[in-house]
Length: 266
Image (cartoon, rainbow, N blue to C red; front, side, top):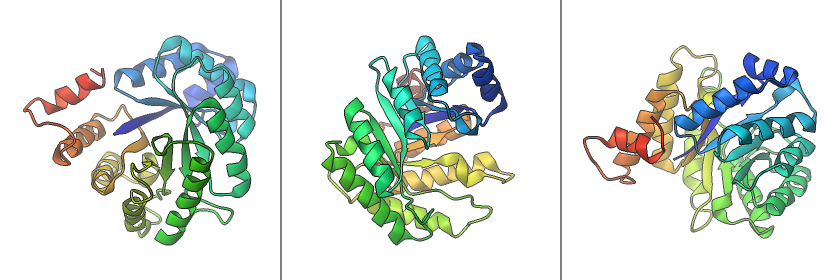
């Protein structure tokens, strides 16, 4: 399971203040803490606080000073994505994200190809978020086709079926699970399949239970990546246990410890 750590996001007050004040401390602290938990990528998002490419450039440089963890640059604005990629130090990068909108694909896919970056493709289009399985699959297939035509390998492509809040759109859970099942049939080897995991728990009282239950169900369908709270030990233990049950890891009584050691986490 590829864990993309979500916490360096200007939607959080401490990161927003750090970005405004150019204070490295909070950003680097979260970079180190999430790396210590075994994050595979650190998602960097300047959010609605800024539209300035220079802010993403600063954020990437500050994180690169602190840790060697791969970086996921996260923005809806192409110049912001490009600014982050331009100061990369050679470590793997992931772009979050493109949609199936042809105008967006034309800008973001070549950027991923130019920088050798992986790409998250969100199964939305000009009409907005999909409400059924068919649109999720159609949009994802469009993203996958354009990306592979541009030279990206399946393992560089992360398809996101758009996870909805269970509190408000409960009927969408089964649609996401079915879309995941169909995504793994797009190619051999298949693309990665990722979700923004915290979306499903928005506004709920049992956040950890809901995210952990969903991730186990989705992993059984083929989910192998998530933007998530890597500081949630319950979630990490569920991921480790699901990998064990799915025969992706060898059983031992100390499998949880082995999972953390493999990731270099505590």
